[in-house]
Length: 565
Image (tube, rainbow, N blue to C red; front, side, top):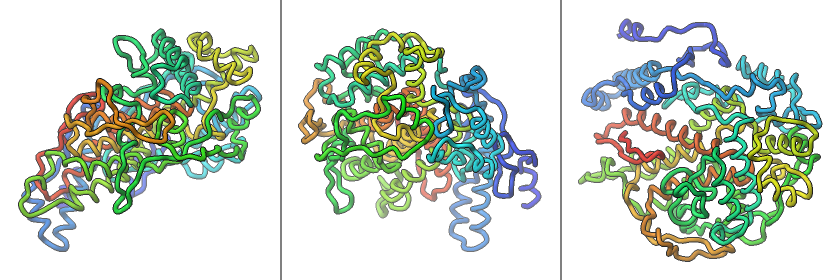
């Protein structure tokens, strides 16, 4: 046994990979390299771990002591070997960091900046030095511009004991700072800021919302959903799945009442006072870029409301717990939906699921996949892309429009109707109005952490519940003031499904961060897909740990294709 195991072990070098400390006995993966994204996708999703037969494992499971320890060891070893033999992913970025000596396309919030918001290069180099070495001491030597700390950059270096390794995750390059797509994303962000206090149900009649639809329709680089080539009130600020553009803007899982154990819960939430936006003057904008707090607090609305406008949904994602939205979805599903047809206890005469394939199992998985999703995304944020936040791009726009500097900002945003309206709203500036006094979190923009967790958690819910082709009963919509719910009677009411509303739930949370001014559309879309991949990899690994015989869980992915785990 020992000789056989030794022959299967991957060779390990004492030389650390870029950004990773020298290997210890606690780390099994010792190299990174290059493979295309397509190769990784095929390999990561298609490769079955090299595990022993179920009959052998079942027999071993009945034996106490050393035999079970050996079986557990073999299970973990084979899973690690299977992951080790996956194709190694390459990590291309958009090239902005190499293209611009002043690093205007990259994240620098919390570091010192000059009066234009251009980062101090000595500080930026201290930040890069920590990333390149991976040494905890080097992270302590990063030069900050104020009293606001960076958010957990070392998270991206943490390894996982199940599912994909963060360093073998993939997101395509984000739009370059000078690109048309980036400018068109900025136009959408400006419109989102202008429409924060307009109820979603009023988009079809609100003049500014209709103007936003018309302008976004003309933008060739805009990647949001369209109907027959047009951005409409039904697609405005929505996600990329088919279910996103059916029914009300807000997912039923964020509207319907649920039971938290014995506690009945009505989903009314604290929101913020209408009309109060932040960072629209040069002084406050620069202070936030430097991390020179304190920054104050949002003013809460005195009335709790259902999620019904951009202000409310921004407030939700400002203070939500990591998997809160999907836990609410789980609470509804446990009382109102059936388990996936692949659940082995659906047909059992003598048993029900609990710690496996029951409510506690799924509840724990939501927290579990959330943490691993963040590790994968933090690797992308800090070790690959280091993309600037929308608020920083707003500074480039402002200084270019006011001729205090000249930056390579695409004309789509400089000449937009949205920007003209922002000038009036801001009383003479072009900064992007942000929903929170402190602006974005202190980590790079691409991709969105909230969206990654959304993709992972919704994937778990679709895997464990029967949601495909299941109609959502009695859909509701908030009244324009957010004070009550009413039955949704739109022409597409019969098309609202559990899968569609779960997909919408993920995109509601992702787009809410954009509406707040914190992220770009590409941050949201690509992060949801990464979260989905993380969850699938974990579900695949866990499948081999169960004693139950399971035919596999079949569900529809965010891209509309069907997968069986």
